[in-house]
Amino acid sequence: MSPIQQVPSTDGVTLALIDLGGEGPPLLLCHPTGFHGMVWAPLAERLAGVAHCWGVDFRGHGDSSLPASMDLAWDRMADDVLAVVDHLGTAGVRAVGHSMGGAALLMAEMRRPGTFAGLWLYEPIVMPRWDGVPPANPIAAAARRRRPTFPDREAAYTNFAAKPPLNALDPAALRAYVDHGLRPRPAADGDHAVELKCAPEVEALVFENGLAIDAFDRLGEVRIPVTVAASEDGGAPARVAPLLVDALPQGRLELFPELTHFGPMEDPAGIAAAVRAALDLG
Image (cartoon, rainbow, N blue to C red):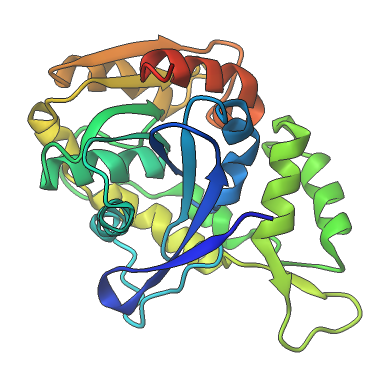
């Protein structure tokens, strides 16, 4: 469907950069843990007249490779962001990030101030520092229990559409997740012909590494305009969003009470309109 370019990153990783099309300034779209760049396609379609959208598969996700070291620290996700920005060759890019993708964008801007002209972030996972031993990560434990194989993509779509949290996704976003997030098994049997590209163990390791970042204490270094968008579902990312805005020199809070943590995939049209307004895209 969309051309995929290969972009080298650190640790010998090769990233898949997806040209989602459109006319206008480049807009980089960064996905959450366990997903991939094509889940942004329904949103990109609604921005086609005002931006040229690009989706990246972070290391270990989609069609990007894993580092031999299995280093999935979120600092390395920031490496991936900067590798893509350098590949695009445009200063002052605008970008949208969801969850882990939002954290990676913030860390990239901290490392190289002025990389971005503005950011729109939906519930970025940047938590205040805690004292003592980090708490257990139930999301990582749940990821390890995730079903990794299905008879075919239609069976996978039916499975995800029938239960939370993915049953709340816009059908086009869920279809993109399934069509581009599974691959044929190398030695498929009749009952398990396709598997998740982001294996449960990889997803769990990424979640666990999210507890180790110290970006919250450095938010004052991010001098560009940043919109932090959040649901009101009561989850930790939504509760922390106002604290992020207070810590950012040019932070702005935008609330979506009808959505959950998966908001950009639940309402691509509404989120596209919010992104267009916040980032001044025509």
